[in-house]
Amino acid sequence: MRLTILGGGGFRVPLVHRALLDDARRTAPGRCTELVLYDTDPVRLKVIGSVLAAQAADVPGAPVVRVVRELDEALRGADFVFSAIRVGGTAGRVRDERIPLGERVLGQETVGAGGVLYGLRTIPVALNIAERVAAVAPDAWVINFTNPAGMVTEAMRTVLGDRVIGICDSPVGLVRRAARAAGADPDEAHFDYVGLNHLGWLRSLTHQGKDLLPGLLGDEKLLTSFEEGKLFGAEWLQALGALPNEYLHYYYFRRETLRSVLDSVETRGEFLDQQQGHFFSTAAAALDKAYELWERTRRRREETYMAESRAASGGWQRDSCDLDGGGYDRVALALMRAISGDVSTRLVLNVANGTTVPALAPGAVIETVCEVDARGARPLACAPLREDQLGLMLQLKAVERATIEAAVFRDRGAALRALALHPLVDSPAVAARILERAADSPALRA
Image 1 (cartoon, rainbow, N blue to C red):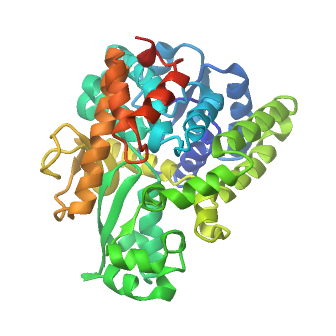
Image 2: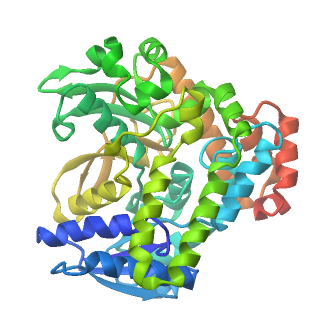
């Protein structure tokens, strides 16, 4: 099996490779035998190639790694295409965050104004990729991790249909943490999770026929023993009657998180821009130490994940089980195994809604539990959404669709609508000023 990674010089690519090596050690059937890396940055490709070579040392049957510089060459012959690109690099993320913060609006890169700006810049590139896949690798399955994952996946679906599936590691992390806290094996639990990317809720957690979620919500000590309980607080989770995705902290605790970000010396984007810039420049000058440098840098990256939200809710260190990195790599491999091996499994994925949430259009991409096999991923039926959950989903889906419209048609009015209707942006005048300052986007120059 051939896997192509677009954004092959990305910092987290070694996590995917590490999961592929685990398959090689087990001689798993249908495992990846060739890994193709494509990136527009040759220095990053060289560094990541060195990290992968060190990881694969003495691993029998490790996939052959091939680096290519042309997109069509990377795509041709691929069974799966993993898209993890960052249009504009970390410098673009810094601007996406800083411009809204100048208006005292949260600028996180996948939610709020920052997510809209990132989507405007990324969607045209993602659509070009989808068109090249359709032209030179029409039988390939595209696994999208490019953020904002929900709207990018929905845009790519206009070209590739059901053959593009979005993934995220947040839901599986939430499920595993909640199951462990409730005393259940995460691999044996069944659950109801539904929402949009970075905007969803775990609403039941069943093990051996019993829903463990009510008991977990009712036990404050257990509830605050894991990340989401510490982040949101027992009182609010008990009032909600569900466990929200960690990114909902930006919505439920907007004032506290905004204050924490404004008080910080640097944004998350600035931290990563500095950290990754230092890593790649240092590793490029000492390729024999690239793996050691990467592992040390990765650990620090995981320790500081969502630090502003943790600071806003009292501050604490992340649990060691959440520092192993990734999660999305395991989701991606589980998805590939199910499709290539035609072995049915259930995963939380970003797919077309169908009839799962009747209030949304069938083609609207949602994030929910899916049945996956050789035919692809199909969303399962779920319990009706509460009014507050559905309301947020409808409003954010309108934002996502307006962003796609703005990016595709270079429609400034749609871009203004996307920003002004976002629940984290409090004024159309603020939205207009953000657009003026972000005028480098093609969608905003029309």
